[in-house]
Length: 105
Image (tube, rainbow, N blue to C red; front, side, top):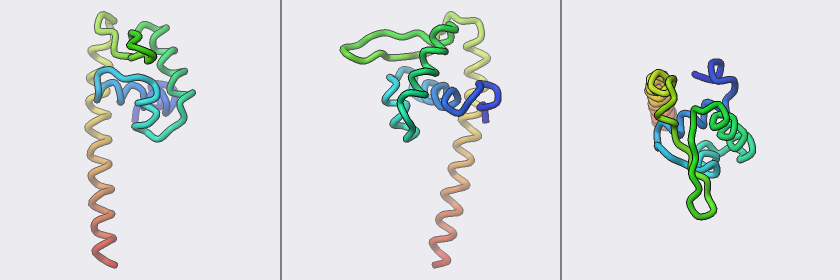
C-alpha cells in the first residue's frame, strides 16, 4: 500500500515491521516477511541516513527503531497505522477465502 510513497516494497516492509514491533534488527525483518536480507539492510541504512531511524548495537546485532525526534515520524506513523490496518483486513479476507475453499472440497 505504501510502496509507491516509500519507493519500493522493501522500504514498506521495513517501516511496517518497525511500526508493529518497535525495535528490530535486519534479519528479524527479513525473517518476518520471508525476504532477502540485503534489500532490508539497504533500506534500514537509507532510512537511518535520512534521519527517520536510529540504531544501537546490542552484542553483535544492530537494532533499529524510529527516530522520535524527527519531525515527520508522527505523521508517518499515522500512515503506517492505516497501511497496517488495511494489511490486516486483506489477510483476514484471504483466510476467509481459504476456509471457504477448503469447505467446498
